Length: 240
Image (cartoon, rainbow, N blue to C red; front, side, top):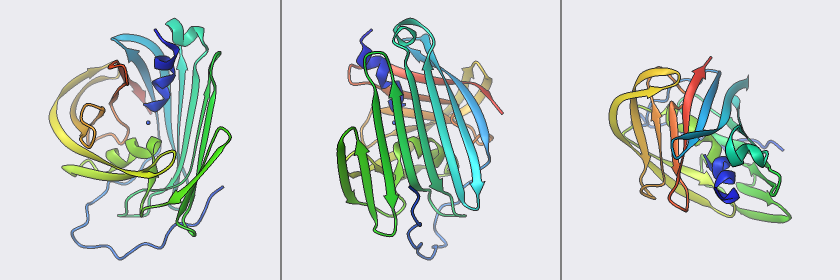
């Protein structure tokens, strides 16, 4: 197994004032309220468990929230290379408004490769400032832009929608990602059996899917396809 594939586990995808919000239309979607949780997952590649992840959503007071996901290699090459990835998102969830990120950080540690990235969302200047290794990228923000890590919360919060277009701040630009509701069927996981609805990313077909149930804000399962065609899957083990 190539180290580059193992390091792709992390893709499983200074605070500033929020941009002034526009009046809400009566046709706007209804979002589920956020509730803190701690969810643990097994991480698989090719049907074999190679790691574990813990996803924690915390309330910071007011409309401010923090999402942290820690992923560690526990078997095979992932364990051998000491894979340890931490993603941390800070965002605003203001009533019936889409999420809006305020800061994001990513840290990957492994024997042969380390990586760091930080995004500052400056809503006063309406600008994202990205620090990636020794490079600095600056670009305009779109309203309600979020980081890639916060996508799982945005989707869980808007399960009532048949489709959802999110503005995602990447390394050097904001990109639109579209997610559509697919089939609902039983899903057997280490945490139990759930009636789960799959949401698929459709702006890049085959890139990834997430499964949810109305009773849970956290995803039941997340699957992402890597550049070499292999799939990395996070499967819920427990949620508190």
